[in-house]
Amino acid sequence: MFVTISLRRLIKNHNEYMIDTHCHLTFKQFEDDRDEVIKTARKTLSKLITCAAEPGDAINALGLQEENQKFIYVTLGMHPKFAVDINDKELEEYFELIKSNRKNIVGVGEIGLDYHWVKDPLKVKKSKKIFNECLLLANELKLPAVLHLRNAIEDGFEMVLDKDIKSAVFHCFSGKRQLAEQICEEGYYVSIPTSIVRNKT
Image 1 (spheres, helix red, strand yellow):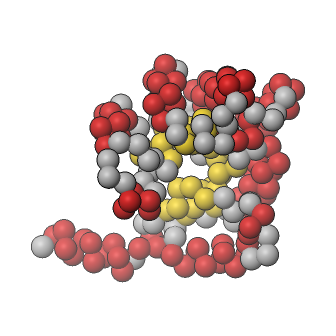
Image 2 (cartoon, one colour):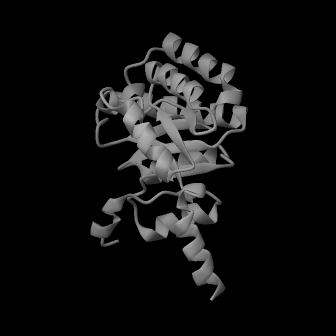
């Protein structure tokens, strides 16, 4: 009975509890209707977190947060798809930007590996190096890591464990149940995409 009453109360007041933990409001797809999207989101969500994928994206995300305080929150990271094209100086400058905004962000991400888009062995090696540096940054700043590990969950999980990451979200998890259980046993979180309905494992 208590569970039923609590569930009804949760549904009735869903906007007091529901948080979108991973979106990309700064992407070009939202240029024409971003304000309307945010306005609509306020009706159903109590908060949302927009994840920066690269340096230019980070500046825009921080601007959105400034305009929508206590509703929009930000994580700053380097998506593996973009990581392979950044040079050392640009990465160093970006890390300084992230460090200088430590009080304005709630996580480092999204970061990770992507064997779907990044297949060239040299680029894979570079993406692993940058992912490693991003994990070290998350540890340094004592912030959660928001992980993008497309077709690379096992490798990413191993690196996360190796760096003794304290808090992490395995975003859009598409691996096997046994691996998800191992991740959760380590105290990490797994977010499940809607494609789970087609997954037989």
